[in-house]
Image (cartoon, rainbow, N blue to C red; front, side, top):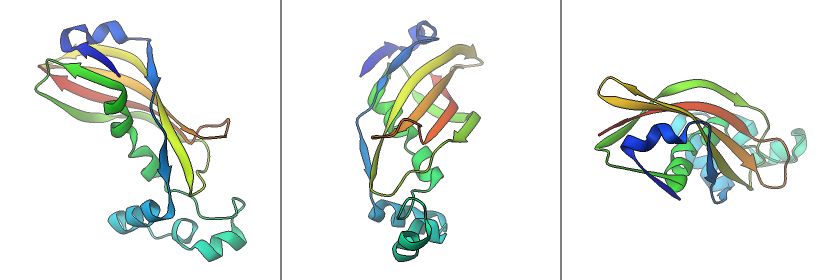
Length: 150
């Protein structure tokens, strides 16, 4: 984990911070996400049908479940000291570039694009590439914005 002071955030611009540990996305997690969001599309939760009809030979993880791991990976890779709070500010671009077969492991690769003062805080634009173990093409590439306050 990289630790950086709030006043030094701009020094991270253009820098790859690191790669997180792997997270297993099993059927139990997929089912919990389906229950939490109401997205029970068969490609995610109907194991038997997915075995028969999906090219992956089984269910696939919700794209938004994969995307929702970004904060976990962010906190694993970067600690910002000297802040009172940090909030999600939005996303500039999110692309789901590959299906994640249920039972796969994913991890995040963090790169800071920019960090600039804005009002009472600092916005940090960063790219998180969500990689699938054993696959060349990532699951998702997202440019996300957070705002930190001293």
